[in-house]
Image 1 (cartoon, rainbow, N blue to C red):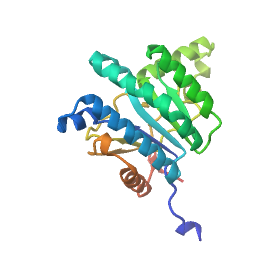
Image 2: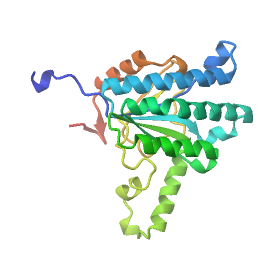
Image 3: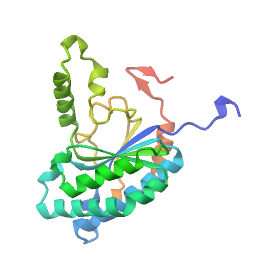
Image 4: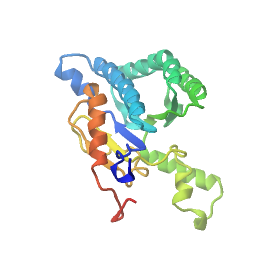
Length: 238
């Protein structure tokens, strides 16, 4: 098959803001916690689909730094779901070749969850089928602040500070920037997610609530991406 007839490559890195869990539950007369549980099911479906479609990096905005201000019972429900998923699913995703990473302020997470994260990262570190990064207690502005502090701590002079110096000190260092950013739930904003990394990402906003998002929706998003002509500062990719 000639190069011209080859199927378009999938995005190497997809980032997703998983929005709409609470509204999905409210529309069905269910508690918000049930929406979050169904959202966790959707995340598992999307991880499996992304790996099948050949995506190498998937970053999921799971819990923002601003989410700590939600009602305490909802935060506790979210931490409970996270705790249960880490205990029950990591061994299985490890068998599937998934590498798990977590970015964000771990100091604010419950101690046992932080330990489960450490163990999961260690278990899956050598896997290369797909890298799944969970953004937990994460905020893009804070990540940039922390990168600036690291440059000061490393003794960089102003002449040594450039884009590479910043990127190397972000929590996402080692991962390529997202090619495609998806936000579900009908909202059209970034909400402090990967502010530096998404400078040239393609964006797709879906009306589908996150608990209803799955392989078909991801496939449609990838197809939309493949049909776009990417530009970088006015220049076409390639």
